[in-house]
Image (cartoon, rainbow, N blue to C red; front, side):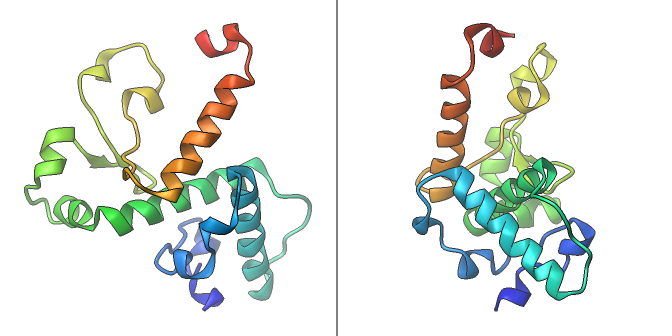
Length: 156
């Protein structure tokens, strides 16, 4: 079962189909623990495949794991939107929110903020389902970042 998690992980394109079957989010109280444990599981799988891995978990690995969880949750909840984007068919949610798939395959919304001076992630937010543990963990992480920053860091 664990070997199915990342057939394509070596190519930095994680296979997210069986991620939820392997790692249960309800066991984690914080997003940092969830991301670190997932990164360690993926490292272990790569070691089993005889890839050379050394040192501590890198920020790049954590970022990739976070994207993998978001993509996995999106594919689970918005499968019809992915199908409509890949087949270039009409979809109500796709039309209303201006959904598109970014370079990582993650669904993002586009709209009136496109021409603003905001960062790319603020201009084109990620679509997350309403009642989801992944959504809860992403928001918890975002709130912790804002709360622990200085005011000029948040406004800058």
